[in-house]
Amino acid sequence: MREQAIQAPPTPASAGAAGAPARRLLALSFVKWPVVAIVVILVSTLFVVATRMRPAFDAYGWLVWGQQALHLSLNTDGAPSWKPLTFLFSFPYALVGRGAMWLWMVTAVAATLSGSVFAARIAYRLTGACPERRYAPVVAGVFAGLGVLGCDGYPHLVLIANSDPMVVSLCLAVIDAHLSRRPRLAFVLLVLAALGRPEAWPFALLYAVWAWRALPSMRVLAVLGLAVIPALSFGIPALTSKSWLRAGDLALNSVNELHGGKFFGVIGRFLGLYPLAMWLAVLCALVLAVVRRDRVALTLAGAALLWVAIEIAFAYHGFSAVPRYMAEPAAVMIVLAGAAVGWVLEGSRRLSPLYGAAGVVAVVVLVAALVPTARRRAQDLHAEISNAHHVSAQENALEAAIARDGAARIRACGQPISTLGNQSLLAWDVGMNVGDVGFRPGKSIDSGRPVVLFKARPASWSVSAFNTPAADRATCDRLRITVRF
Image 1 (tube, rainbow, N blue to C red):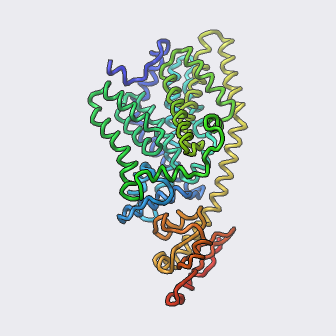
Image 2: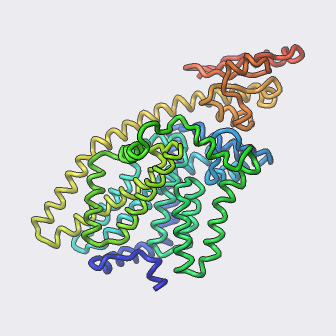
Image 3: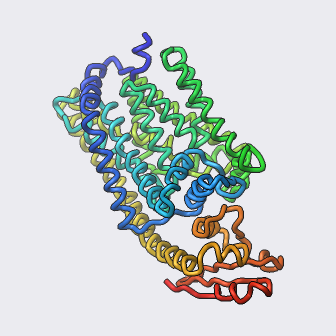
């Protein structure tokens, strides 16, 4: 009974069919995974170089954490809010100095692409084998893999090296590992996801409870995993900030908070991640899962809805509940839609050739309905890449300006200040904590304290020292430069 509990319970009609592709996936996993990993990393590296992408506010803040922790001066009082998952990367990456930025960007892109791989594997597995139509599970996998990457806002999140796509990939990897009968790996991945998003905490607890009862050998791992989540989420802020709840306090002050109806506001944001045609496909998938009595698919759907319910509760508490926090349940639903495509293609032929043709037509109509959305996503990606080129040139100019004068000299002439959007970037370039860099230029200058203002213009940076003591003017006035890009 315990061994059966850790595998995906197939439906009576598809037990034998689902077992074949599952066995093939498991048999080839040791050969495929190193190859897949190498390909994903190479593609990610080429993507980072070709797009000239750069991190945004949060990602630079995470890189600063690594810098500060390496020098035993970590301070999590300032933005961004504490996120243990990203710190697990930024801390060791800090050992390579400025190269940490490149390592993180490649990691963020690779994590995003891996989510497509896991989505395809899950949809392939859920579809099951179909000797007469071998393409059915393959089409299901391709649909799910591309569908996950088609989430609204994904191009922007990828090109600013955001961590949310990484959490999506971790959640999909959890499902894939569990269905592959690797519960220990699944739990470790789930703990990592919980270190990236608090919505995953209840799922880690539920999985630990299940493992405690079904797999006694996992009890130590379950306890350790559950202990790691609060230890890293609250323990480090308790040691490095004003409060162990500092991350939550910062998140509560978000400008993206819902001010209308929380329930329907969150539902609206969730549904806005994909077009109507995709959600109709999801609805069909749920209906087919009920008809097929597919407990795996229904369990995944229930988990996705639970995540959304948790997000609704967070919204009522005052958290922002922005759409990207619900990309995880949306990705699971898209995987189910992909499985439904496979079910339609492989199941319709059992009825009659007429129904088989109707199934193919239905899938073609669905794909055609999604073409306009795919075109918009491609346009979004192109626009984001163009913006990334401008941002890259701007940030390279700032880095050159700071290198010209030296970060130590700049800090000696006063507090570096800029606008809020550039606060973490400037902190990264001058080697300071984000909270120690000013973001209100006018107020800082009026205070009378020595400051060094970095002002971003459409095609240049201007650097100026204000309120410089008389003894330092000869040195600090030389900082007054304009760098064009």
